[in-house]
Structures are given as C-alpha cells and as structure tokens.
Image (tube, rainbow, N blue to C red):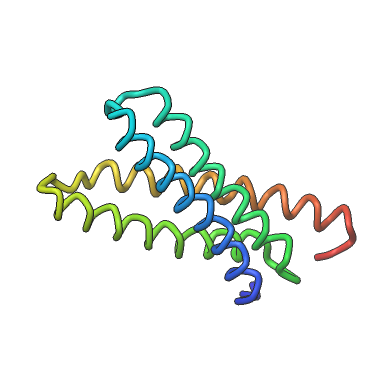
Length: 131
C-alpha cells in the first residue's frame, strides 16, 4: 500500500475543479434564474460534480505506481472534506441548519464513486502492465 502524493494531488485537483466549477455555475444560474431546491437543472450539475470524484480518483489511481484504490480514495477524501467544510460554513452563515445525514450519505456516495474511478484505473493499469 504505497501512497503517491503527486498522484493524489493530481486527482484531487481534477475532482476539486469539477466540484468548484459546477458549484460556481449553479450559483450563477441560481442568481439569474432563481433555481428551486428540487430543480432538475441543479440535479444535473450535482451529478456533474459527483462525476468529478470518479474522474479525480481515476487520475489518482492511474498516476500512482501502485495501489490505485488507496490513492484514488485518499484524493476523494481530501476533496470531500474541503467541500463538506465549505458547505457547512455556507449553511451556517446563511442561517440554515447543518444536515448530518446528508453529509454522511454524500460521503458514502462520493466514496463509492471514488472507488469506481479507482477500479477503472486499476483495470487500465493492469491492461498496461502496471501493478
């Protein structure tokens, strides 16, 4: 189980770019069109942000010389921690309550998506002859 910090950093930056990029677009759309909480447009961007965990963990797993699952998952944990902390602060500043169940469910979902990305990377690594 070897952790490759350059691989983790690369995957985390990609996942963070997806997440922050989609969050900015949603905020702009919300300011322009006043999106409702259950708006399908917001759901599409949520799925795009979640895709960032798959792609980011894939990048981390693909760049790691060994242990694609560990590297992909560690990249996801770092990004999810940043996103969750930002979301909690944003909700508290906005006067909303923190929803612990939503944080746990989203963390579980992000972990599964990260493992999917790492699984794809492991398959590609095996096909390319890497460990």
